Length: 225
Image (cartoon, rainbow, N blue to C red; front, side):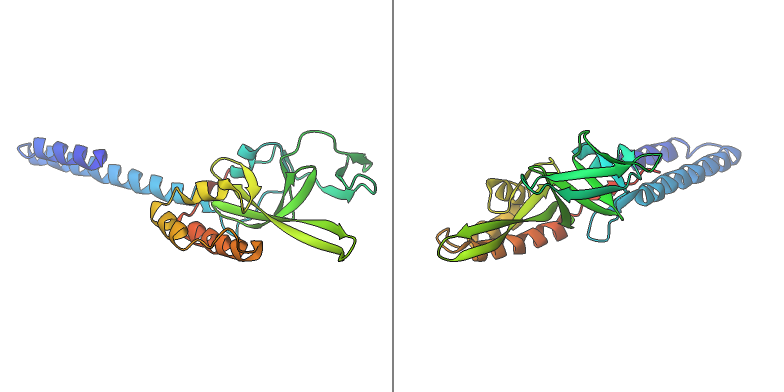
């Protein structure tokens, strides 16, 4: 807006200039417009919408900031994931320059392989399934019941792309995020199901608003070379 005002003032001040000065001003104005347009185009090229088509650069991400910049600290390192038979903890391995298999022990926030991101949460790595302002990954856990036997439960976790916070979809964090869209939040609290209903219905309700929020609040990630 300031740029437009500045150009208008400049034009008004030069209305009484000679024809030669007017031609010079026109040339400068054309150059100014071209540079402004080029800057806008480059900004669009450098920023990519963060949705399910987004591809992460392969490598190890040691922080949330590296993830949102798609800039792994250790690029192109191929990792293998194993689950420890006793503690069930995920263990990462890599191959060094001599092709020797080594255990990876340094810090990790996430890693990407074949452009797919795996988030570390409580010593486990889970694939990011839904990408957007509210991103989603799932974690399975085995529940043993003496009467009902063994069942596998799947928990839904959200990653807030504004803060890097992680929580289950039933948490206060989800409502905090929805609040950022005041119009959508009014719909959310108006039609919200009773808390006494089963988790599956609440989960389905929250997921429906998750998709609405992501659609109405797109996130763009800057792409570094």
